[in-house]
Length: 239
Image 1 (cartoon, helix red, strand yellow):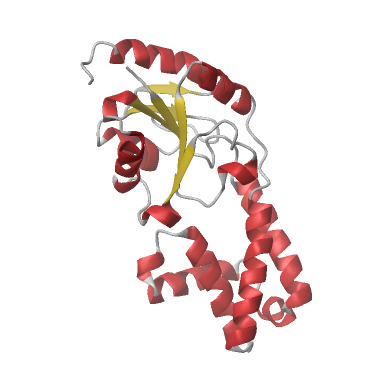
Image 2: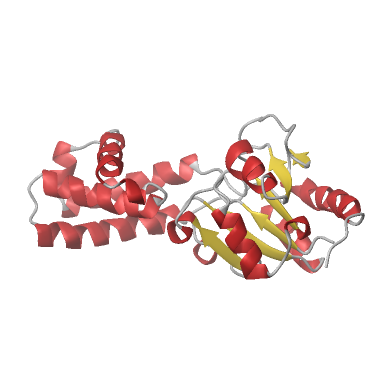
C-alpha cells in the first residue's frame, strides 16, 4: 500500500528558469549598490565562469547549489579587490538577497489543489530537491510534511542517498512510496533504481516516459495516477 508521495520541486511544481532569472536580477541590483566593483567587472554571464572555477577548486561542494552560489560570490568579490572581511560580509548579505528572491515562485496550475487532495486522502507528503527552494518559504509548509535537499544530504539525485534517507526518515519500504518529478534521470531513474514507484511530470519539457510508472502532463491528473499505482501496489506484499 502506498503511504508516502515525494515531490521534486523545480520544474515539477513550478517553472524554475524565470525564478532564477529574477533572483539573479535582484542579486545584481543589490551588488550594484553595495559592491559596485563586482558589477563593474562581472556580468550575469560571468557567473558560469565563477561557478566552474569554484567547482574546480572545491569539488567536494559540487552537490550543493547553495555552497556554490556563496563561493561564487566570495571568489568574485575577492577577485575585484574587496578585503577578506568585506568579501565575507558582502557575500552573506548578497546571498540573502538572492535566496529570498529565489523563493518567489509561481505554482503551476492546480499545484496546491493537487497537494491538498493527496493530503486529504491520507498520504504523507515529502519534497526531495537538488535545488535550494524551501517548502516553508515558498508557501507549502502547511501541505508538505518534510523536505530533503542535496545541500544537506551531501549528494544530488539520482544518487540513491536522498531516497535512502527519505525511506529511513519515514520508516517505509520502497514499494510504499511514489516519487513525482520532471527529470527522467534525477527523478525517475534515481527513484526506480531502488524500487520506488514514479510519476513523470511532463509540463516544462516532453521527456521519454518509458521508464516511469505513470506520466502526467497536468498536475491535476496526479491523484488519478496515484490511484492507478495504488491499485497495482495492492498486489504486492508489504509489512
